[in-house]
Image (cartoon, rainbow, N blue to C red; front, side, top):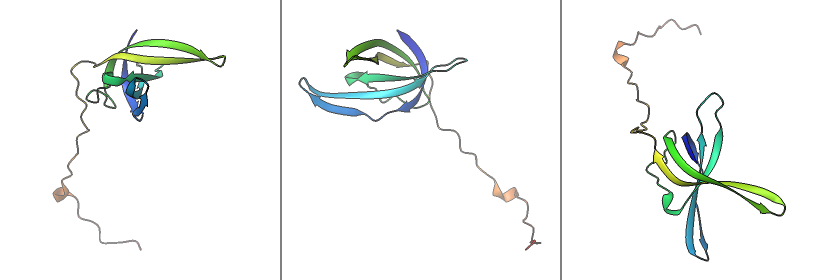
Length: 114
């Protein structure tokens, strides 16, 4: 499946050691576009974690699989990304800082009310 969504939050990177060696997992929260936006938590595993495109505010093209499993008679669903790309040639830049010219500010009044 594929989805284009805006990255709104990066959750803490998780790491560990398993029987097959070390592992790492990054969960991200994305928000879809449209009249009724939806928030989705997507897991990224191993080498697929690319910090250079995981920037809050960036629009991402995400290819993923959905998988459910049963544990103790309850069902759990995972959304696992297998490919993440930046959507288009966008750059996320901080908002410009406005410079204030104080040389043309009006003179303060000296007639104080107190």
